[in-house]
Length: 236
Ligand code: CA
Image (cartoon, rainbow, N blue to C red; front, side, top):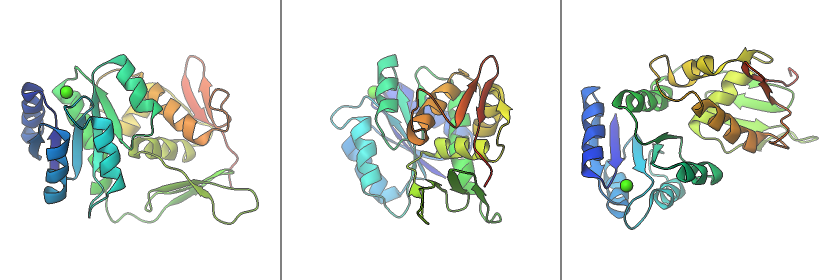
């Protein structure tokens, strides 16, 4: 598994590289957006760790360019952000990033996030599985989720990040079940996750924006006060 680290601060880049190499990943580093684009074309990394604030071409723009020009491989993108308002930008825009991590983070947290993203591509050859609910169709192998449209045979394809797709899958495979944050973290990042549990709320908010007719008054992903979340939809 090849990982590209795009980070202009040498110490942070080196720390990330050491943490990942210890886990057996091979890493290379780019210090700015333009040289990163060259490396991506030449090396076809499986995953890109992308700092938001970069000289020249910033992380958001680089992310957009990577998604516009998918190569032989469409890499996973883990965005690094520093400040609160940057997180709002990352979430507010549909950046195409699969996950993000707020600085400062621990090496352990970083490794857990990277593993969670790559776990998906390592899990090959499973049996085909499709979940259908009253309003959604989730094709696990095809990695596609769509919303049913009244009177139409084909649904409307949802543009979800890897984490949003995994979260929706957890929900639709257990309709009506109440999940607390720890359980969802376990499902999405694995039990070695450690960090702020509120990351779950952020991903729920992002998913609501994409699937709910009115995200401020959710029909599907309900908040269960004092407990967590549950997904409500009729079985198909
Ligand atoms: Ca930076």
